[in-house]
Image (cartoon, rainbow, N blue to C red):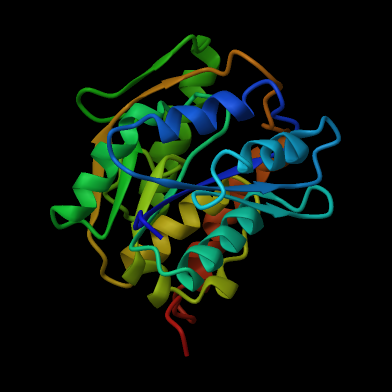
Length: 244
């Protein structure tokens, strides 16, 4: 294994983006391996990855799952893969280019320079969004303020899904205690790291709305994030996220 950096990309029906997003990561000057976690995409995303593996047999990996099992469980499966295969830094990234692969090296460098996990943040100086309607921006910023108020986390973009974890964070958190499967998963992982004393560093990024494919955001995901944060905060008074 030549690279110690792994990028996990969960997919469901991303045939329009999958080849180009993988190639964009491999074209970076910093070395990364890629793990695609595909939830049985009926559009053939998994098969497209298998074809591309012939060109990148050592650096492109695929986990195929039977149906839509949730974003959180996809990342948990990816984390366990990364730990098993001895990667030092494990990143999360969307498949639709809303996260710019060119920002990956800055997330990695933040961890190499002292952070335990780094977050690609829309809501710090230098960050932002592109092509977002005003109602979506208000909802997103409102959710971030709500999460900060409930959890007392000093993270400006707690719902962000562009993250780099150092190995020790994922080794310390009992991953089976992470309960959320939608976008609240991103909040819970940061909260678990914060309660265990890890240093979180935000790195400014510009989040662009997807061009190809269909958004996975649903009302159920939003409801989980709103009500789940209260439940998560309450349960944390009685249970630690650390391994027993």
